[in-house]
Image (cartoon, rainbow, N blue to C red; front, side):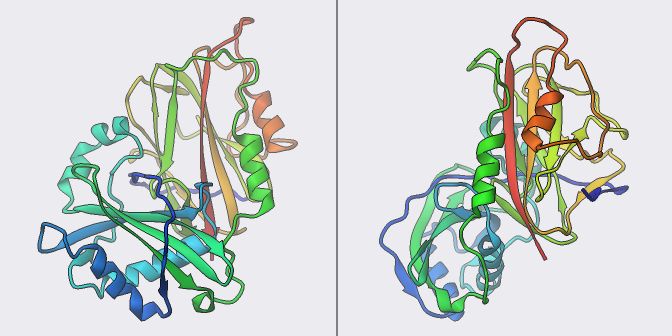
Length: 325
């Protein structure tokens, strides 16, 4: 696995993700139609203008990204510049994927002149791609508008993949729960999102950061799994990290004080970040930024042994993202 960390500072933020429902769709036959379509979504908005930030577009109910995700987001960025009412704020805004993180980063959220978040999901339907576009008011969390369109398949670049691969679906399933033998505790939760939200897409050379919260003081390990299924421990690491996370305190990784950032590049495809919190100290610490032997699920599980012989409470979280050229 190529080491994706470089010695540079990093900023972090996160976006809300709200589920949407596919309904009857309008047909969009040209990219030039998209600005007019967006204008219909804000026709009844109470302000004369709306500044929006970009959330994530993911496939159907999977919350997984595909190459179509970033392609459509790029088309949407261009369309927003041509609308009569909407202004795109092309900067990461610290809106949160859960209330605890949003509250902790209110100073970032409130300082930026952003009214709303645009996000959605999509699915294949014969020769078209059905896309749900949603706009949510960031101050209130209320849905401003939600519209559906059928994006003609002929508008897509040749070979652009819309659906998640079977390999990705299987990887997500296998990595979903690794805490075998751990006690169940509904009050012990771990939340994690990338700076672009759930199911984000990144281009070569862009940087990724994470926001993580835990409902209890806990010990924490963060692993990266690349497109080939190879796992590495990425936190704690040689540059710092106590291996602990404080109750209800949003943790940014990499933090502004860290001497590196998480820079993405080839090989392209779907990658995963897996975080595991434990109320009992972990017994071992793997070498950081080094390929762990064997399949990712087994490699990570080996590092989850705790110092107590008794069953321990654990909480898990996972972020999935797509890397594109």
